[in-house]
Image (cartoon, rainbow, N blue to C red; front, side):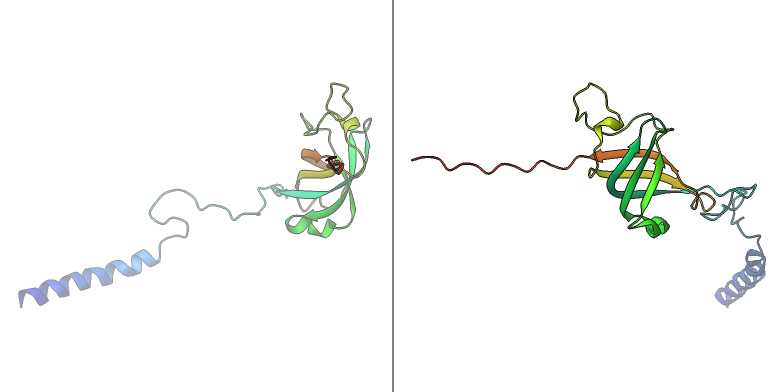
Length: 158
């Protein structure tokens, strides 16, 4: 009998506590920190944070005075995939370093080392507001020159 009285008491306490736990404010689950904002939501003033996108393709042309490059995009990530198969202009003005090899042996790594047809990878942060305006600001610019074809070996005389 004593066991059932204890069980009934605990059940009554749980029944009273359950509705108060269910009516707690959302985002306040036991801690006093505010609820986090969902990803991709704006941070105020109508501006969204933007996302990083990767564009891979071939180098078409570059303008050293305007510090821009044109890339024929073969593959882009995420929503930027709508640029696949098109030529996109990127601004290199904010970059500290170009990831290129010194192919012309002048001692500097610059746009003069990049030739048409080189494989290019560009990282750019885009928001929905900047998606229509080119040139896109590049955050990283890397070039891989096409590999030279190896000459076939001559047969050894016996």
